[in-house]
Length: 215
Image 1 (tube, one colour):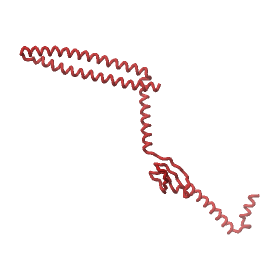
Image 2 (tube, one colour; image 1 turned 30 degrees about the horizontal axis):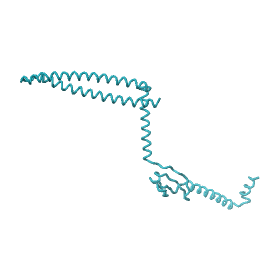
Image 3 (tube, rainbow, N blue to C red; image 1 turned 45 degrees about the horizontal axis):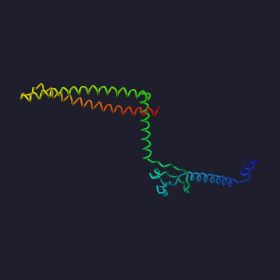
Image 4 (cartoon, rainbow, N blue to C red; image 1 turned 45 degrees about the vertical axis):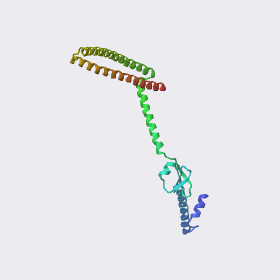
């Protein structure tokens, strides 16, 4: 019945051809107006952001300040159609650095696990290495003591020549010179071993502490 009414309304015998054309034009104009209205609703015409003082700033284009504070896209009627969050380059950079640090820490943790498995094994290796350094220090200290004893002997011999008014032999002078060089080198070696002991202990303490936090 409804179809019959519509067809009757548009039928050439009941409605002239001219009337039909105007009816069609009217319908097309209504549809076009609706399309334009919809386009006006979704098309951004203005962009508004609020600065640090809460002052609204509106422009027809997006500026760096819009991006920094975040902005609203407005239609021609100043109605909000979209909101965009603020973008902070410094904050983004800090986050990128933090992500890189975290990735590096994960890689370090994985290497520690592969090398030591747990804190108990790391503690045993630390004690083993420190004991080896202590033994080296003890050997160097014995050598230093022997060199110092030899120097006392060489110096007494030198003094005997001076008391007797005789020239000191070249061989004795060479022994004194070499003895002094060896003493200085041994002292440096002992100091280096002490530094190595401290560095090894500090390094392993950090490793053990980190492994314990992962256990």
